[in-house]
Length: 387
Image 1 (cartoon, one colour):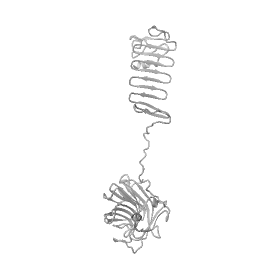
Image 2 (cartoon, rainbow, N blue to C red):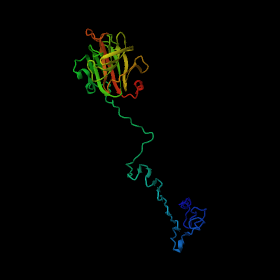
Image 3 (cartoon, rainbow, N blue to C red):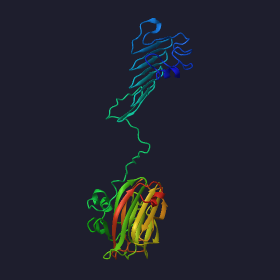
Image 4 (cartoon, helix red, strand yellow):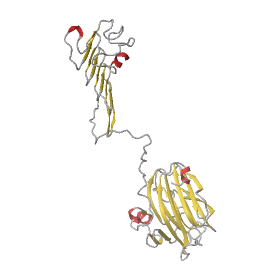
């Protein structure tokens, strides 16, 4: 069907059709139009093709070997061997062997042998294929996501691990305590959450410490994969809790440890703050097969510490009271440590600069931890970024 025959629908009256079917503009009987020299016939209100009685005062009919046209005040119909067109005041329908189109003031529907797409009505949208044809209702619509729709991130695997130390019940509900798990004597005079100090974990150790095969108080969780633990603490002195301790290696911090351990098989890394050998500062330590290597740096006795693992790299970081931001203290490569490890908070009450603790002197550390926050680092740079 040519463009000219489509235009006929726009110029009909009850007596004539004022266009041709592909030829020059003109009447129905034009040289190239429907009913022109090709042998068509014209029907008006008073006559029909072939001399038969006319269709009446409200309709016009044109019939040729190639097309049939019927026009009434309510509709126009054009039929050819290749297409059929129906136009009413409320809708237009075009049907061909390859497609069907229905147009209304509210919607346009195009159907082909492979698919039919109906654009959304005010409350519904649908896509129909030969294998699935859902019913559209105002209450059930399939709507694709907006281009800028927010993507919900995966759940934080450590969401239930962090502790703000404002609930005493989390001491055993959330944590494991080393001496209870390993059935050894306790190594502290104080060890509580939200009791000795509101909203804090408080540890006052007896003679103990993390060096070689020796251990001390340890509050930990078992974790897997890349992991970051941050804490904020004050390594204070017994009786003078806002100033640092004076005994050697009286400190508080973080330890990550291989759960499989024993004499000659202790493997862990540590970062802490407090009084070290002869000054107040940080200690970082790596222990391989129960042999410890430590490094000390001057630093305040209060602030934030992090131990961060990404792959086989372990980053020790500080943001202490004299720091402007996070600083890396040390990093260790420990490919020997397993995926599943223990990670938590510790204290030292060594009282000696030698290989063994001094049991004749009482430790003077009074450690207060504000929180323990776990999260998954994105990469090594994230070990020093704020979440």
